[in-house]
Image 1 (cartoon, one colour):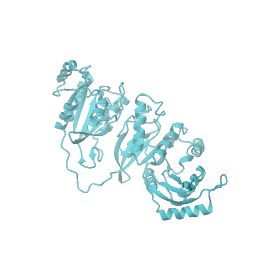
Image 2 (tube, rainbow, N blue to C red):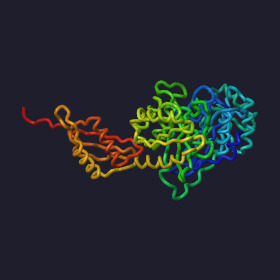
Image 3 (spheres, rainbow, N blue to C red):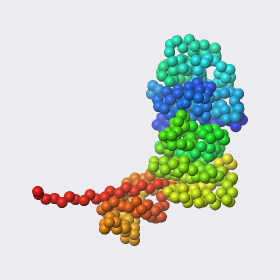
Image 4 (cartoon, helix red, strand yellow):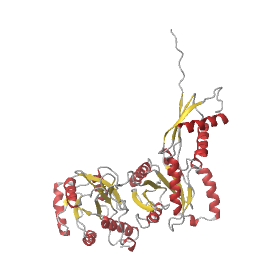
Length: 463
């Protein structure tokens, strides 16, 4: 295995439960396409792990919260483990080996319809060296006739195989009982544990722009698989990272190639997972390849972040490859394509070398501060009074709507409600937003303005 992964340590907080303290970790390993992700989905009770009927869809070690019979644990999905792999497959195998080192127990999944292969036997040798409890799982036992095939797995020397069908749920209850029997009981929560946890940051962008490289550089180790092949990351990968003297929860996501409706197979689920990652996050870091033109997909991700009301930072990666000519055209693209998010902090970085990644924490702090800024009702109405006096709403069709009063109704993201005598022009709403930013900052955050026009009173009278 790659020396890069030797001596890997458990990321801080990995496997922690906010209410009950640290929980045990179960790693799910096996050859490609034996049904690991399907089994993970069965265990956690929802379709989170990306599943497709071809090998290699899962590439990283991806943790999920799970529980059985009232006991919580973390289940870690891994890429298909081929011990003699090369290239990208070698990195995937290394991630599986790291997962075993970090786990309290291992669920080793074998395809009962195929039987024992040379790769399975090689994995068994690695598992024995790890000296962790191993539960042998014979998957794809969809009926009683196939159980005889499952019991041939006794020959692996790992004890009794548990015949299951991850796709149909057959036998998974008995399997989970066996898992709980070998997992350690979670220790009591330490006193004084911080409530709320680290800030949640989603790293988003098109495939192969350097999102995983950025996460690895921030973490100071190889947490996720990096390869020049576009689309290496499919599942969102949560990582607790100590950076800039504080702890952050980074969510690395699959690159969005197509619209969700146009995507198919694992790309469809990856797009959904990316949207889920943005929804869970407080701040999104949009990573752009500075060498390439800003594309429609980039703008679509920006729109997704804005619509979900998340704070935003734009990171132009691979800056070491940008020459003067490219910088000139990039400035023009920024003016044209990013006009709707001029409020987002922009930083130039090179994730591969770590150049200027120290600028990420100050940008995150600014974006979070803007995202959580609150203006008192008195201050806001004083601002509105000055604005309306200096720049009243233009007259439209002989009518001029007036702003009666307003208030900030929420933070994260900042939302304002205006009570008016009539509908405001969209251009005037944008003008109010621009002046809000000039006076109060709101760096790195979308602002939403809601208008409630006063209803006209119907004339009363008897017929």
